[in-house]
Every structure is written in C-alpha cells, then in structure tokens.
Length: 467
Image (cartoon, rainbow, N blue to C red; front, side, top):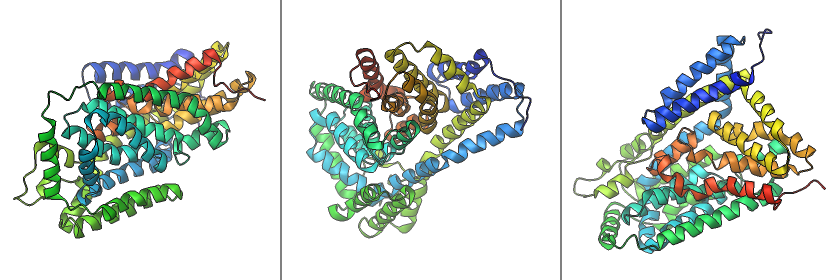
C-alpha cells in the first residue's frame, strides 16, 4: 500500500460524480448514447484522479475486483432469473398466468391489480427482480392484449415489486438497512410504513382513476383478447396444479429462507419437466430456452402466433441478462475506484456541516442516498455507507436510528429502479420491455417516498425519538 496518499479536496471528491452526471446527462439522456462507454469514460477520469493522489494501477484493479466480488452473488441471481423466465415461458407457467389474467382482469382495474398482486408476490419472495420477472412479465402480456398503456403497467409492476421488497423480511436490502443502522429488522419494517404506505395509497389512487378514465373505449379490446387467449390455448396445455408448482417452490424457498439460487434452479428444473412432458417441446428447444430464451420458432409450423403474442413470448434466457451485467460491471468499476479514493467520505462529511434540524438531517440523508445510488448503482453500498456514517448524527440529534434506516431505503432502495443507468433500472426495462424513463412517472411509489420523508421531517410526524 502506498503510504504517500494525498487527501482529496472537496472539489476533487465531487469531480468524478460531476463528470459522470454530465456524461450520462448529455450522452445518455439527450443523445441516446449507450451508457456503458459513458461509464467507462467516467472510470477513466476517476482512475486518473486516484492515480494523481498516489494510488497505483494495481491498487485500482484490486479495488474494482473487490467491489465486483462482493456483488457477484447478486449478479449470479440476475443470470438465474433469466434462466427462470425462459423455462417458465416454455413450461407454461407465465403463459398460464397471462391466460387467466386475460380472462378475469377488467381493463379498468388492470393497473391497480398489477400493483397489488406484484406487491404480494414480492413480500412473499423478498425479491423485487423475481416478482417483476415473473408476475410482472405476465401483467405486461395482459397489458399488450388489452392495448393498455405499457408504461403505466410497467410503472405499477415496479412500484408493487419495490413496495413488497421494502416490507419483506426476506429482502436483502431490508436486512442490510436494518443491520447498517443497528435497528431490529421488524422494528425497521414497521417504521417503513410511515412513508411506504402513503406512497402505496397515492399510487393506488392514480392507477384507479387512470384505469377508469375510459381510455380503452376506442380499442377493439374483445377481439384482441380473444385472439391472444386462442393463441395461448393452441400452444400450451394448462394444468393448473403442475404449472403453478414452480411458483410454489419459489414461495416455499423464500418463506423457509432457503438459498436463492438453488431454489430458483429447482423451480426452473420443474418448469423444464413441464415443458417436456406437458407442453411436449423437444429437450433441445427446452435447454436452448434456458440460454437464449423462448422463441416462437420452436413451435410447430402449423401453429400461427400473432405479433403481439410473439412479442410477449420471445424473451427470457441467461443471454437476455448479459446487457444488464455489462452495465453492472461498468458501474461497479466506477464505484470501486471512487471508494478507493475516499471521495464519498469527503462529500458526506461536508454535507453534515449543514445539519441544523431534523428536517435538514432527513434532507442530507436523502441527498446522500441519492448520491450513493446514482454514483455506485449498487443498492447495498447505497444503504451501508450512509447508514454507517450518519448513525452518530441521528444519535446526537436525539433521533432513533430507525429514522435513518427508513430514509436510506426511501432514497436508495426504491429510487434505484427509476434510474436508467443502474442495474435495477436496466433490468426492469429489459424484463418489462419499457424504457426506464417511460415508466418513471408511473412508478409513483418509487419517487413519492422521499416526498413523504421530507414532510414527516418538517412536521415531526412519524419521527421516533430516543427514549
């Protein structure tokens, strides 16, 4: 380790973040450039800065490797989710949910139903990605069938997935926020309701009003729905008990706290058996679907599939997650170099100088969470660093640490899926087939949480004191 390390000035600490924001803001948002090379350029700038203050190239590589190593379990889960989606489609599990959804869901209540059901699944499983990749994909299929607003449906799915993720004791981010701040897990979950429940109610109101606003009247919905139902009936055999078994396995594994990847692989294995013995696909096509996803070319030539149904079914597979993984690696490389430089510590210590009241402390926490998730693109890091660094500030103000654990979740966990350059934003966009910036306004729960956090900070409502 080089002992001649220089301390970063405040401007130097902020400069990599500013460069990244400028590159992404101009290149990605305005000119629609891919985010990966922009993140690499940000890494280059951060690397030059770290080199200037005394770190070697080898130390930078070690920092990047350490950051990627810590996140590798999440990346492996991401690949497994792609495999699971591919097998669930060819095995008939997701198509069956779409099939019955088309039959029972009224267009007026599509969005609120997507919010509620995705929330339930996410609470039971503790994974926002898993619920969006399974039940969420099914709702996107229903939305296509009804000619509904795909952005609104995706927003409802994302909102429901992260509502459940925040309130699930099985969620990794919920446990990390609790651990980082030293708060009891269930006490943390209960305190989350002060901001999460109002956000959920606000979301529900928006979806109900929009859904009942007669925006389906100009579309020949019955014919489109009938065509999709007929197409699914021609492709799949719907044995409710066997096709729901993969879902039951996921729920069982989450409730009993079994390891995530083995449980997902077991659910995928059951789906593979369903595909071979119930749907009568060849073993070659079934295995291919685990890697490249399901494709309508796997169907017999005499089976006709509409373009809407093809758009729905042609997805999944481990390869479908490679683009998301690339973004993850670029973002983690930037986070590794930035962590090595100590820039985040300098920035947060500077922000703490402005804490004068409870509201200002809540605001600083939100700003720290937004900065962390925007820069590191990693939900775990964005919870751990502010949680560790701001605990003493809350104690000095006489505030219970569960205020901190709630606020870092409001400003990091549920913000992550509405940022296009994060892994969560890329995953949701790729899985649901809607761009992040398109569903962002509709994911009401994801951005309204920080609004309620500030309101409670100003009014004192829901602010727990140290007894």
